[in-house]
Length: 426
Image (cartoon, rainbow, N blue to C red; front, side, top):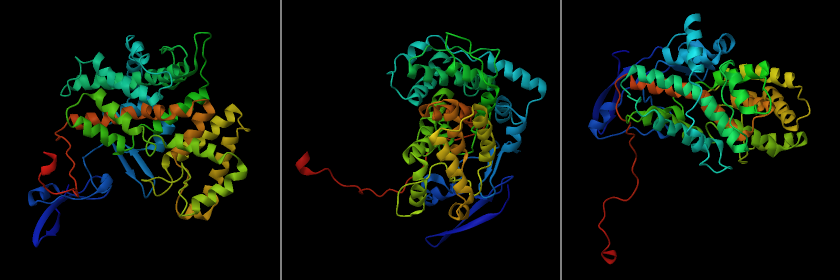
């Protein structure tokens, strides 16, 4: 923080506005005093507005940097597993070996969901989208833990964090099982977090499921790389819902709803849809030309990023993981994967993409990995929500543990001014 000021002239009047500096990133101008002067700032999409103060995640899009509590995402992906990253996001520091072991045990002991929730799943249509089911089921958790949702209680917030991190893989896998008409598979405490998710997804009562360690490692990487991403649309939604004092399960459900949008969490699903539209390697050049044509609405999904104006740091990790998975599964003849690999080569070598820094992003590679593992596209955003739950909760908890005000964005009103009710309609 600093004592510097910015000066704004409005209607001939000079207003001094405080300026603050964080530990990293751009300085911010405190505009809260403007409302007293009868003016608002106008910032559609809040792209130039810092709506909160946070110590959790920092992104430098120009340099391609993503830090969780100060640690680069590449180092976390290499040296930690997902649950250790969860601990870091929730507690601010990496766990000691003892703390890590205890956290893993705690999560394993909370993986089951109340058996009455089976009935909740059966209330949905068989063809319901898994995200619709997840949104409803997560919100319904508040009906099962209504006596332990005191937002002011540090202990109850911690217990809720454990429950959400532990139960999301179960809920996610059951969303899939219900959609395909297979029996629900219960979690197993002898498996790791990603192994447990895979066995609940692909296991059946007919035989024991043995998770492939390469695929389990890939899932863990996907979980890590999607754990948090600062003040994006869904995280901001969770914070805004939480600012009203809403219970954490309702807030996380609101984040899931926001994530469902194709411009947000549905991006990796959009990548597979794009590959399917291209259809054949022979069509690649035509679609690349369409992407370069500014008058053509077609876009290559999975390339470039709204925040990162350089290479997405998560994409480097995901690219290596993608190669490991494809090698392990021996996939060479899948037409969509061949198209994806050709597009990747073009994007990394074509001057058009290089000059505009339209590099493959994390969604491009994660979509390929999930398809290779056998996960349907309808489940891609569900897995994203599973991964991001800890980030959402960390931000909700950070807000709830400090002083905050209910969110109340303003508007630029352009509708009719005051007018009388028409006489002929009275």
